[in-house]
Structure formats: structure tokens, C-alpha cells
Image 1 (spheres, helix red, strand yellow):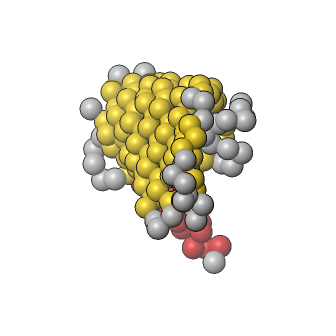
Image 2 (cartoon, helix red, strand yellow):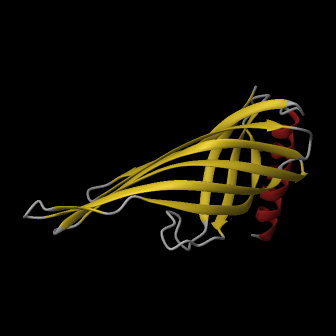
Length: 179
């Protein structure tokens, strides 16, 4: 079993090196995350595009926007939450296919609760919440010359009590297109 893991890691390293060779220094790139989950009692949508610039082989930076919608329904209520935000990010690539990233954000959170059967709606106060996501990730080659699949893990180190990220690690899978 350990041999299979080692083969997987070596294959990953070989394919991710190829992805970053296509993103030259001085290159603009765009990408981000898109996710959704629709179930009988839950709905979750995340659209978070980003644009960045690769200054050289080790430094990249950029900015993005966040849109998240979450809905949770029970027998007695439905909770709806919308998150709108802005972020900037900086990446350091210690090797071609691995990066360390810092991403300060400011998110505006709007939420309401609808109770059944009365249909009473209680709107929560809209709030602004800062977050600082720190983490790392890797780039997997897609076979395209200027793009790659991004897999990363982050943690909100500010831990504001109203953070949309909570206290758990944040796992992301996205795609970057190089221009």
C-alpha cells in the first residue's frame, strides 16, 4: 500500500510541474471556486472568482469576490444566509507546483429566519466580518499549456464569531486559467 502512495505522490509531482511551466512570469491568470449542494433540506452555492498576476516564478498576487448562499430547512424553520465579500491574496511558490497563500477578506453577511407554520420572518442584523485565510495548496496539470487544477486547504486565523468559515479547515478545489 505504501508503494501505491509513493507512486501517486511522484505522479502528482510530475504532473504539477508541467502545469506551472505554462504560467510564465508576467502572466495574468484567472480562476476561483464554484460549488453547489442541493438537497431536500439544504442548499449551498459558492461562486468565488479570482484574478491574479504571476510576478516571477515564486510570487503571485491578486484579488477576488465572494458570493455564498446557504439555506437550511427544518420542520419549524428555514434559515437563509447570503455572504458577499472581497478578498486579496498573495502566493509564494517554494517549488513550482506547491504554494503558500495568505488571503485577507471582508465579507458582508445577511441572514433571515422564517418560522413555520406562522410564516413569521426575523431578519438578523447585517454585519461585516473580517477573515484572514492562511493555507497551502498544489497545482495539478490539466494538460492545457496555461492552466491547472488548484487543490488547497485554508484556515481562518482571525476566528471572528460571525465568520462564514467557522472553526473548521476550508478545503478548496478550483481551476486557474493562464492568459
